[in-house]
Amino acid sequence: MPIEAITGKNQLFKHQNKIYSSQSYYSGPDQDMTDLVVGYYEIIYQNIIPNQHILRKSSDYLNAKFENNSFAGDTMNSFNWIANLTPEAGKNSTQRTAYNNWPKYLQNYFQEYHCLANFWLLPSKIGRGGMVKSKIELMCPKSKNSCHDYMDLYLEYIFENWAELSMKSTENEYFSQFTDWVDFVKQHFLYKIYTDGNYHVVMYSQSKDPKFMVKHIMKMIALRADAIANSKFNGELYNYFVECGLIGKNSKGTI
Image 1: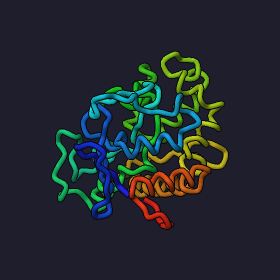
Image 2 (image 1 turned 120 degrees about the horizontal axis):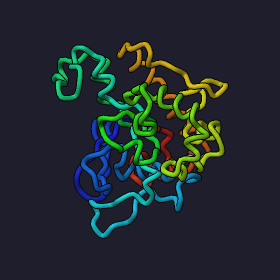
Image 3 (image 1 turned 180 degrees about the vertical axis):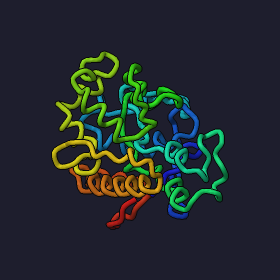
Image 4 (image 1 turned 60 degrees about the horizontal axis):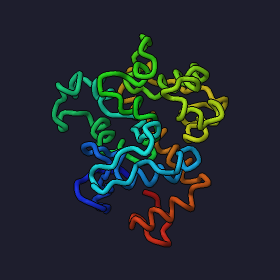
């Protein structure tokens, strides 16, 4: 179910098949750092987050900062890079056309992509280093292969440079939480979704066909949602969603 960031304090409710959550994180509206999502991270990533907290408590509700900048929420598959490949949507965010001009597949993706199964943790330097540079460029400025938030290219970069990333002082605290690439894939619920059964990254962005990529991404999001729902964190997530009032105590539904 898609998530929308809203103003206010301790606000959380469902309306017309969407979840609305307030945000104590200090930035502007940021769906992957809303209060609901921060609690979700602290459950599924409890084995890798130091002190098991994403945000440092603040007397000012709307000014909470990261407890550790190496562990920040981020959206796995974003919107603009796909929209930029869609002629009807305009070639970049400044030339973005009106929603009604977009093809149906892009409208549906825009409505759905901000969801729990499309969120994960990254060092803030990578996930929040700026809108202009790609994730690859932020991690490796000399890279000539701009990934434009393509998850397959980004994961391929991590796979190929695991040893180096584990040694870099700026990213070491994050990557040192994983024993190796295989553990990284498992802890992020990527196995047989973003990778194949041999832990090789499944490549898809080379098609440059936005309709195909949206279909593929939405399938991966659904598969990752299932993997998380069937993980060892199932019980804690269920109790958390009940506590948040998103599902009934005896509900078997998902959000």
